[in-house]
Length: 69
Image (cartoon, rainbow, N blue to C red; front, top):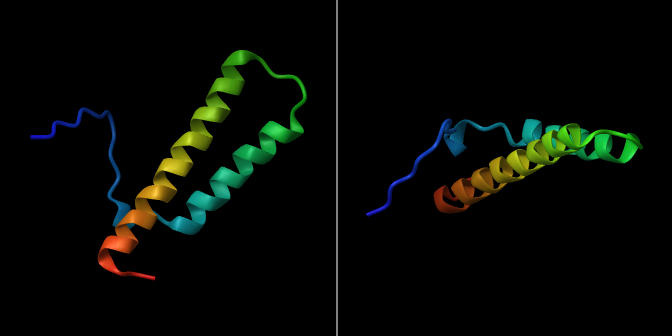
């Protein structure tokens, strides 16, 4: 038995992989461009990067299972 507790959820088949990659790239670029930022902003940007990476992995797993290119 598996129980998942989550505030939000997304179905992998409805995630736009291109938009996910673009969002991740924008967040990483922001980290590189900003020289000085507070801990809260740093944490928020890193959380965004982690979220987009998780979304990307979900899409890739779904495609592998469904044999979609």
